[in-house]
Image (cartoon, rainbow, N blue to C red; front, side, top):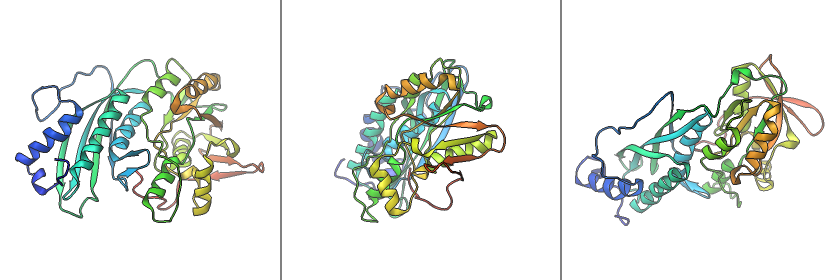
Length: 334
């Protein structure tokens, strides 16, 4: 089927739809011979975490990944930062008439590969086909299911003055990658997306640590917007040290040239961990010992519990307040 293109018949539930499911999806996701029912049957115990996301990234192939990889990694990360163990993913595909089946195969195979790395199973899915020009190639919707266990306890209500803010690596890589891949501004860069599943990294860094306050993955809106949301939701004031922010030189250069701020550029393979000061050293070293966290740094702290605002200490020693990302920064980023 690799040389064929998606037709409306692939979405009508007939023979071609059956062939697409069998030769593309079941082949990639490891069909084990169980009856194909309208719902997957899985066994879960205790509390579960559930997260739903949609992926409309443009372009669908980019340096460091594609829409399929980011769909799995993004879903895994949403479950992992809640303190749960990601277990299962469902995926719905909206395919545009004319889409190359070889590209679909490549995307689905990358999903299967990323799921294997993360240790999760793709257990259910759906495919719909829309007319040419209606979906920009492909959209993917996912739901992730995880199980809460005792090893990682999240206590956002316990945030207090002196708690440390840690980021697991350089910021803005994904945003600059997508901006470059679109080729609209003549920007040339070797930056690759940081798209990756972080559940193993998070578990190694936080397992058994009672001081973990909250974790978030700073995707759309970047680091600053994510931290502003935490500040406002839990009425804490944070201060970031601008000189401590890990930013690749080529990312900084691209942002300077185009008038963007790395603090607001999207990330798809980074985690923010806010932890008690006494857990800082353990968490930081654990992150830095992992390939995905080797550039982890402490970038600031909670300075008070009152007004709920995010401050940035500049190299000049002055302090300015950061807000949410204003306006449309970079659409179709994930």
